[in-house]
Picture 1: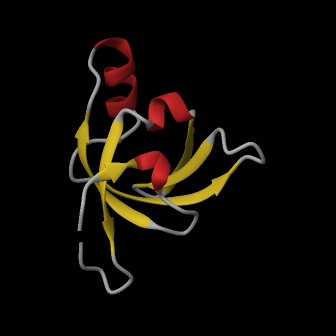
Picture 2: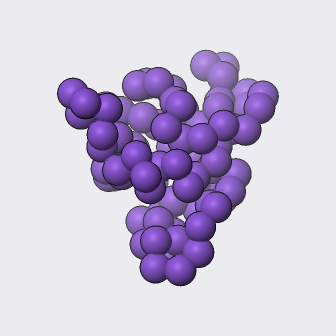
Length: 83
């Protein structure tokens, strides 16, 4: 499967993080939340105006604004677990 931006995932879709495209304070904050390359995530919800997005990662739920989600590249995981 192709690598896409996290924001393009639909609610209920799972993916594996492949790359964090920012450094500095924002990059550190993203990584501190457990969003690191190789981590599997699932989009569990979106606010009415599509911002922020709620993610499930490592047994907890967190939210990201779209400008943060745009910095994360993922590879979607198919329903059977294949990526």
